[in-house]
Length: 125
Image (cartoon, rainbow, N blue to C red; front, side):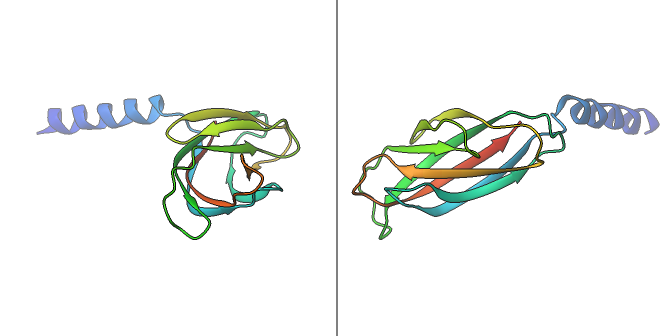
């Protein structure tokens, strides 16, 4: 019995050591995105203020009324950094400045006439 418990403790400890301690992932569901200006979507905290990269995964996109119309692209950024194009069903890296533990995520529609709702994940490394 002691051998089984010891083995279990070793396995749990190895998993804890392997997992990245400072990464934070936040899920956002049907967050409104304006088509003409950057809109705050969500934010995540990091244990390391030196962190300068995060990843955005867009799982789904809808029209602003909630209907599914096949939207695919949205611009994303954090702080005042250069925006990158995120595609539904994929992940994209987003850079940001050092110095803050809180890392906001902003998005703007790809088409200037279509507001939308987005779902996905903001993962701060």
